[in-house]
Every structure is written in structure tokens, then in C-alpha cells.
Length: 210
Image (cartoon, rainbow, N blue to C red; front, side):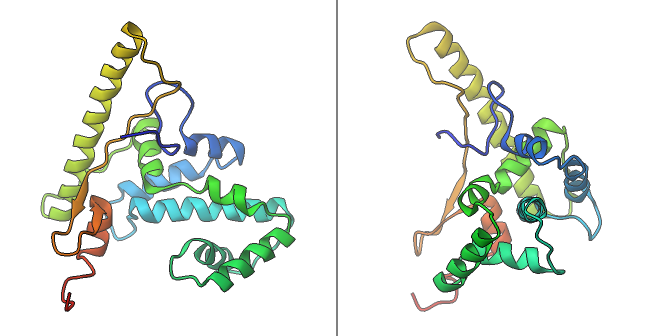
């Protein structure tokens, strides 16, 4: 456990997503991502997809503010080149320089990109949204069960931390409590979050010679 800028505590400053929505006047995006997360049809999007959508909207807004017009799909391609692990160093350098020529502070932009955990925190804590998957979907059931347990652990730990802070010399400014369940592969040692494992469905070493 430790401090995470993407998490919000029951005390302290607003969550990162809330701050960015206020800063860039993205008032409509909250309702959009809530509807996409809670939808029961083929339009439902995962938290990871919604984080990408949110980050692309940040990039799009920064380009608008700089007076830059883009073609269809161009913002999505810029984002992919900035964030995809498969992007070559040369391609990433090229897109960073292009954006910087357009007066985009790429370092600030990248620091503002949010994670799927930040989107989940925003939807659950700020908008009061929840997603209850169908009983027939065991993967969604697993994700929901772990999410609930992690939230409970965070709540209990935050409450205990507040009591300790009030009665001892132990102090920490604006604490954020994080619970992170990791699943390790016994063969190769790689670790996954529940979301990562359910997105990939298997470890890279499955079916390999190693």
C-alpha cells in the first residue's frame, strides 16, 4: 500500500478525474463514461477502455486550445504513439516533437493521463455508479468481487489510519489508501492485476517452451 495520485481518499483533495474535468470544462464526459460502463449491451466499455477515451479527450482538448485541427482518427493515433508499449523510440520521439512544435507541453499532458483505477474511483465515489454483471459471466463476477473487497479494505484501513493519526504522533498529509490484489504466474513469475489478467486471459508463458 502507498500513495497514488490517481486515487481519492475520503479526506483531502478531489480525485484526479474530477480536477481534470473542472480544469478542461469536460462537463459532459462524466455522464458519457458512466453510461458506457453501466450499459448491459454491446456498447459497454471496460474501465481500461474508458481511461483511454478520457485521455484521448484530454489530448483533443489541448489540441483545440492550441488551435490545431485534426483529421478523423488522428487524435487516437497520437495517443497510441505516446502510450503504446509497442511504439518504437523513433516514432514516440517524432510525435512528441510534433506536439511540442504545436505548443503542447507533452510532459504535462502525460502526467495528466489517468489510469483505469482513477476512472473507477471517479465513477464509484463521485458519481455513485456501480456495475452488477450478469450471473452467467464468471469473469465479470470475479472483477466485481475483488473490487468490492478492495474497496472494503480501503475503507477500513482509512478509518483505522484516521484513528491512529488522531491519537498518536504518526502523521501523513492527505493520505490515500490503496489495495492492490496481484496474481502471480508460478511458471514465469509475471504478476497481473485482476483487470490485466481478465483482459489478456492468459500469461505469455502459456504454450511457450519455457
